[in-house]
Length: 279
Image 1 (cartoon, helix red, strand yellow):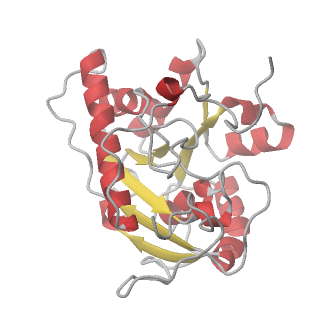
Image 2 (cartoon, helix red, strand yellow):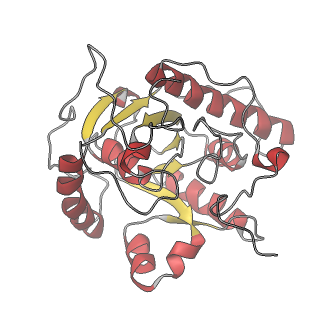
């Protein structure tokens, strides 16, 4: 596949934008913090935004689907690089919302990072543990309080060889159905050119283009309550289908009909799948 970062020579190379692509500054005034941002969040955003704006180019669309400040919502995005939270945060922040990411709980145990994440209102995710319900509760409460919560339904970096989204976890549906909020699908492409999955050395030049597309809220009406396993699976599949559809438009390709499932493929669902497993 031409331009596919998973193919030989693809990672770290930035493709030229197609004619008509909108590349440039965001639609809202630069440097203006979202209304729902706290002081610590504003300070962090002021520190990170300028260098990221220099190191990347932007091709953004669909921001009109983000509800205004004060309206709780869930943004569901694909996950293909450890740097893509900055990509998603940049887009959401510059269009008037302070994103509250759901991040793995182990990061909150780090002395400096954990303190900072708590101060900016991020939500710990206890993966594959008895405390997983706390993550759902924290996200649901934040949304009901009018926050914009960002979630990666796959719960980890995609293991798909061509970087398509995998089969989603039902946590995204549980939060959406319990909160009764708009679910905005978001797809992005380009972060893997800045930092390949599980890589440690970024490719800074030429500045890669971060393509972001937000779509209309996913219609989850009539699927049933969050207590229904069938409703959770149907809602999750609907959300993932919306994300994949946006990514197909970005890439100009058709995704595989079946989502990659790490369990079925015998690939670890947590951690670097390329790292040798200890016996």
